[in-house]
Image (cartoon, rainbow, N blue to C red; front, side):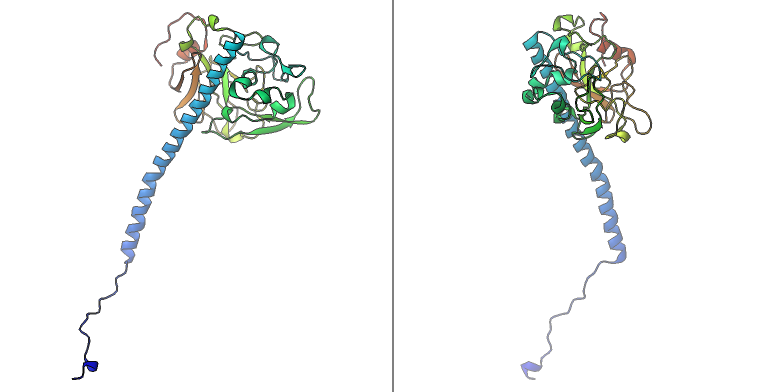
Length: 291
């Protein structure tokens, strides 16, 4: 027989394909893996956001100490929400003469001296990245009517907001109205005294005027920048109402603070309300239990 007429002896293999059952199994396995992976990714992201929030608070605490080193007293809580930052010429006032609150007064100590000197309308509307908790939102402003006395613009005015508040609106904390405290006034010890922490907000109303999230970081003696330690801290809420003058946050299970010695820590919402009240008081002369 001629070689050209020979039949090849190489076997022809059947084509292999996925069955419907195999395909469904693969899809199910991928779904399970994604379901396991997403919570881990979200937890890692929240951990990073919490670290950034703690760093924000650490920088605020250092700014308070640098302010004290320069002036021999801490920033005040300012005068009132309807008083704009006060200047003598182009120089901001300090201490009891400054109408704006603590977050305005520490600007030179967070590398924002030029903004501090820029004038009331500019500083009121300029957001500071380090004043926002990344677990809640990025830098945000709010356009509302100018309600300052006397008015600044005579029309609408941009207000840069803030996610942190000082202790306390009850008048017993480090940051008080009108006249400043000094380190010597912290009779309970700086390591047992709350300075600044996350503030509670209604997250469904972010970007809209709220009683405690409209005047912004320059506000003097207002729930935008001051909160009560006589009220137990609570997580952020969704729905009706505002932060109710309380500390709190968007972090799961905790809110974060910087103490008067500059140390930072996370505090669980299960903290005893009496212990929290003592933490906000500079001279109650009582021992604070572990929290």
